[in-house]
Image 1: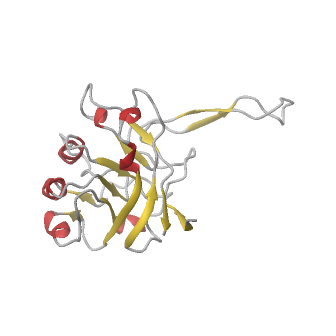
Image 2: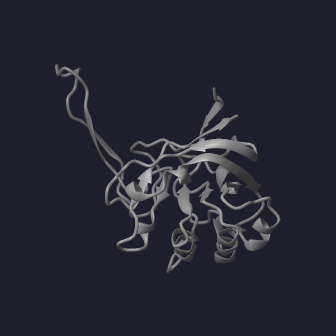
Length: 210
């Protein structure tokens, strides 16, 4: 029996903070009990990168795997959460001293976690640089997560960090809510929807203690 399940997902609604240019969430009621229908149904329009989400290799590599083709072992198991609250950019020096082993899933809690979920999009969020990404690839991690809408520096031209991870079969989880999460080891689950042809998917990310 799992205990102390912690929801680390962003809420999805019309006010959800989005990456600039992404499609705003629009939830429209179809059938309505209030209007005399037998049940309630809804239709939703939104970007696949809305809220807490995962990126598939197809996001940057045409013809590569979509979210429906990714190995689900990336999205369930044990995760190590590391706290880096005093950095503006996660560098190789920041991750080199951390206890990271082959096959680990690692989430990074930064000062991004202090940004209110309903605050307008920020361009000065904490991100990861290329050397840190390359170091984590060398450590052979399986999944990396961060507490804002992108792991990449804002207005980067070529998205090297995404490409480094995705080309090395490392899943990226973005938009985590880690404000009230202590660093340590947890069980986690953040399954993507099985969207054929989708380059990303929102997830309901949760942690649990053993």
